[in-house]
Image (spheres, rainbow, N blue to C red):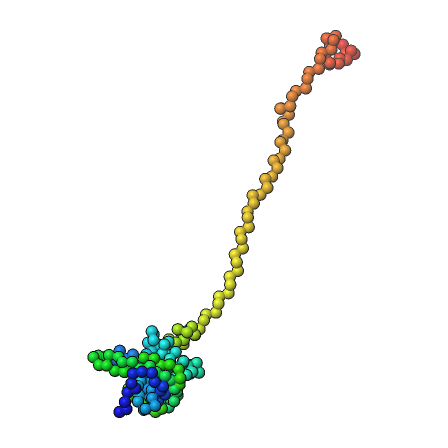
Length: 212
């Protein structure tokens, strides 16, 4: 077994990487194995949880040159017998970390500069693709891309015609009142009486030829 890369800053190259699940909760992660010029090795673990996935992708893309867009954000592309990032160079910062009562060296930072088969505990291809699908969905959602599966959009309903404004109702013009009916004859004033003749005769004419 080779020695572990000591504490400090070191120029290294990638010799292996693979997907795995770690711990009782089987948290998915991508493991990258680095090697320095002396042949010492140390692994870096990039967690693939909702809170850490973007930081992991940024390290893989920026420090190690992974083209996630070309791989359609599929981390399964990092699994296989011929690691595509093998030989990539980087500069790592190693610090000591106490874990479960033991002190061990840990890769704290992976910075830009710069294969063998999957290491112990690596997923098989089927498991890697399953985790990859979940990771890809999270990355696309976080980066505002399309969701991996969307129901077909319903066609937009035809726009309803705007309701016509109600026609203001105007009161019909009042008809002119009919002319008042003529007063009946009984209501008319009686003609004035003629004055009697001065000789006391009435207007009645008598025939003098008729004897009395």
